[in-house]
Image 1 (cartoon, rainbow over the protein chains, first blue to last red):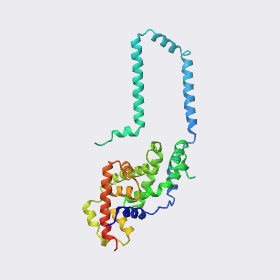
Image 2: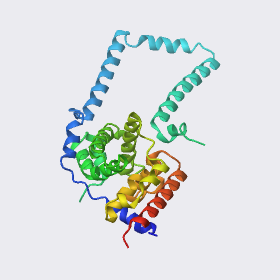
Image 3: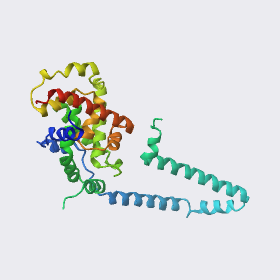
Image 4: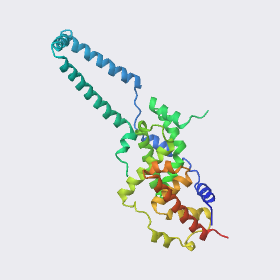
Amino acid sequence: MIDDETLDRQLREAVPYINDDGFTARVMARLPAASREPRWLRAMVLVGLALLGSGVAYLLSGGGRFVREGMIQMTDFPIWLLLLFAFGCGLVVGAFAVIFAIRKTPEVRDLARLRF
Amino acid sequence: MELTDADLVARVLADDDQHAFGELVRRHQSSVRGLLRQLTRTDVALADDLAQEAFLRAYKKIRSFRGEARFSTWLYRIAYNCFREDARRRKELVGVDEDQWQAEQDPQTVDPGLRHDLMHALSLLPLHERTAVVLCCQNGLSHDEAARVLDIPLGTVKTNVLRGREKLKRTLAAWVPN
């Protein structure tokens, strides 16, 4: 009977190289149009708009007066309440960070699909 | 110096460079189309349609390629998923059952020539064995890579390759001219 090595070699040799014959061109013709603007330009536009929005908000709020007043009000809070507030903020930010990290990590995401 | 697959992928990611993606298509079209032709039992038109769909999906999902596996392995997985979805639509995923395989392996019905016999024998294997044999024995993927492509346990891939090989050997033992 034929051995594994010979069988594998014959299997490889049995499949000839398939000529392109316009296949690549057909795939390329169906690709969605490439984005015209460079990636850095998009980032600059986003940062610029964020800065502009922050500037407008600062001016409309009377030079950020509400922020100063809020900080002054917070100094009247008891220390445990401030700590609780800081801890809560940390938890919320941490939870979002973990969720986004899981969504971006296939290995962790795949854990849900493991079969035991 | 020729760019590696990783270099070309990096160009696609950085600049949305479609020429770089075109080079990736040119490099891998033969193996992907060959794989799909085996899976579709040499239905060339369907295999080429699925191959096109696979490359389009690869382009759209290229940001999910993390470089942990070879680009070809990642591509095979997409191609296999395209085939599976199409087969599900056509309700043909079951493949040939054992009885049918036994009935069809009559040497008298096959043209002479080892290559033709081999390809015919391969096409008669059940889908799960055929896929494993094509990926591991024909395309040179490791069992681990094939398990990733097929999204099945490593042990199942090994079993399928073993069974597929044994069936091919039995078939060829009868067909190979002395």
